[in-house]
Image (cartoon, rainbow, N blue to C red; front, side):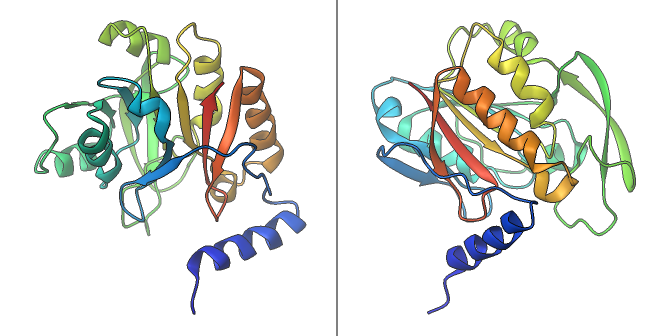
Amino acid sequence: MYNPDWLRYSKRVVRAALGFDHLLRPECSVPTQKLGSEYGGWVVAVEPLLGTPSPIVLSFGLGDDISFDQEISKVFGAKVFGFDPTPASLDWIAVQALPPTMRIYPLGISNFDGEQAFAVSEDDTRGNFSTKLVTGKSIVCNVRRYSTILDMLGLTTIDVLKLDVEGSELDVLPEVLGSDVLPRQILVEFHHWWHRTPVEQTYRTVEAIKGQGYTLFHVSPAGHELSFLLT
């Protein structure tokens, strides 16, 4: 039987042998649930969400798939603050059925407050704009630091932080980890596989996350999406 997860993992093993990918594994076993579509879904630790009335979720990088945000709202009654600065995504979201507990903000997240250039390759079909691309269609968008966003929203606790920010995770995570408001869970997609960032930077960032008291509890078969729990 065809198993796409097996194929994704096999490809990762080959890339890791060549020095281009990682073979990180979960370090603990906790009850988990995947929320959202095959393309846009994320794995969360269930028990911290069940034990929290109206969990607070910051979701950065919405694109054209908000299935995770919709489902975490429905299943756990989460209050979701969704962020995407790109006009294509905002236009798409404008005609979607949003949960009543979800709010959208036309901002990206970065390590400074201001404006930042984003680009998308000419052959991209899903509008995956990135600050790390230097060719293709380019736009300038508003971005804010993690601390600025917390102040703007008046938040002092975060239950889930989702970062699908097309390469900017390496800039943003040090800001998050240096904050007094550490998210209970961090869900992050790493992009060394796409932006030709040395995989050593992903390893260093994972170690920095763990150094702040987080445990890695889920790794997707392709190794792109990692989920951490503050312990």
